[in-house]
Image (tube, rainbow, N blue to C red):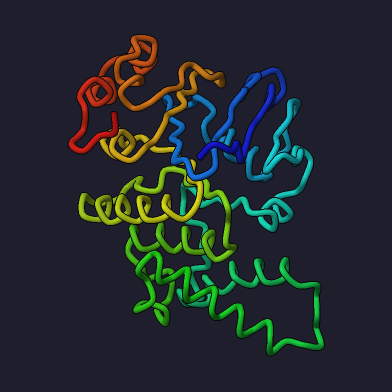
Length: 264
């Protein structure tokens, strides 16, 4: 975990006169599970969208594995190893679960090989293999033939993660992966995130403080588009500025009270 895999310097995103992100200096090390938290409107999803290339930065720099990628389009970032699962599951509801995963795998294989249109059989075999591996990780292989739109909310969210995993990322961005889930689904996704963190670097946005405090190696807190604090779960729980930023309520209580199994 000694090597920095992703960093930003002065990263800023403006919409007119409004700064959604302002001068964000940030880095995450290889193999780290880093949470990004903050009140609603803090700029968390915008920050992830800048990292993934879904929207362009106004100014500042993004570096991945030592190379600047600030102006690279999203598909090229996917090819380099950055994948994002979305806050609202971005799946193809009328296709099967397997067909959805296969689309992510196809994006990966097309990046691995030049468009070799005269050799489809070799590439198609690799696509199916990668798709099945991604579905196995999220425990959806048995539902491969089901229509994606008929899945439960939790399974749709995990299928969206599978699409990202099928691109075989080095770093995975998870935007509110347990939002709207039942307690049972949250526990299942908790186990999935812990498994993924053993295989790749994971960045996660989430409002479930019990989950965040239990799984994170470190936490970055955004407030009004800027970095307010960084530290271990214990340090963030004890940070008075962080507690004040959340303005009380259940989030502040969760921050102040260690969750069962929370990391120090």
